Image (cartoon, rainbow, N blue to C red; front, side, top):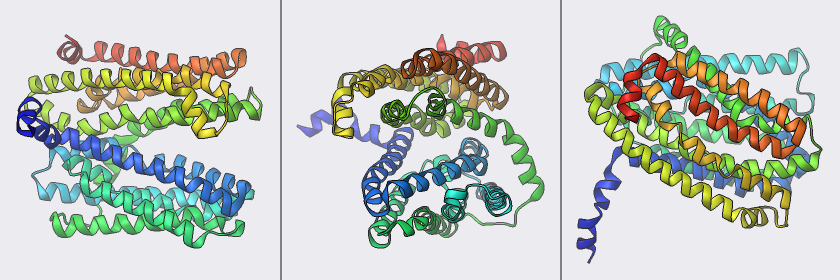
Length: 430
């Protein structure tokens, strides 16, 4: 019976597809991060109290913002370079050495900036020690070789390593964090375990994949930083556009409304990872295909795009219909306002999927300037329109502003691509 089923549905070929594997392992990484966050939250609140828990998360938010500096666009550009040079160990060795050197340099600069702010200008007074010990997370980010394994399309090992790192972090909370005065070690432990696992992965890359580590080439690093400036600012703009809604709402609403909206937003932000994971999963293969066989590239992208749109539509509809149950499970109470927000925002995953094709076309064609322009136009639109609608309609207005931003960024990317390279648009959409 199973043999007949395999004839109808080539499951083995489906699973062996590199892009499918990339997506599955990236999904495992993100899912494990979300799951560990959910499990650790009540443990931390119980052990260190709500106040210290808030300060720990505030310090983590500062670090996440600086992690954009550490990433500096390499998470988008480096997988493409690795994918193109998969068969050239010498080129890969130089690439790996220079990217890691650049990211460690950026992490050092970011750390110095934070420490100067803390001890030189007396900033972050309430959580200065927590933040100072959290800087180890910057070096954990700098040494994370996710981009390398993405480009090599070998995601199994790093997904296992990520889960192991998070389990060590969870074990550390259980064993060592028992009182409010130990809150300073929460983010520090996350950084320590992440750094240990990342260094182990670097050892594997060197010993088992034959990648050598050379002394950094200053000229190559400077060139890569200059080339990635637009990607960095694009990431910064996207971060503001996607995560800035709560900050905007804080200027116009009371704490209760912020809490209601925050609950719905957290659910939607997890679901919005779906299109981002798709882009990361198919990017390496797309980069190779467009160079080797453009016709096959467009066929591949069209097939993926249609399937993703169907999946995104199903995801959005499921979110809309299950919103009352989801809010009730997460909050253990009936919060109608949160349900309303979640049902409005339920369309976001599908609308975000609309732009997958445009983003892949921009990335594989190395059109960083267009991506930069699209990101900042989206950011400007989101901030202005969402602020206006929020001031007039509160949380509902913010939801409308975020939904319209997803539509507008799709149109922006489409127009920019059409004006710059009509052959890409014709090859994909026609």
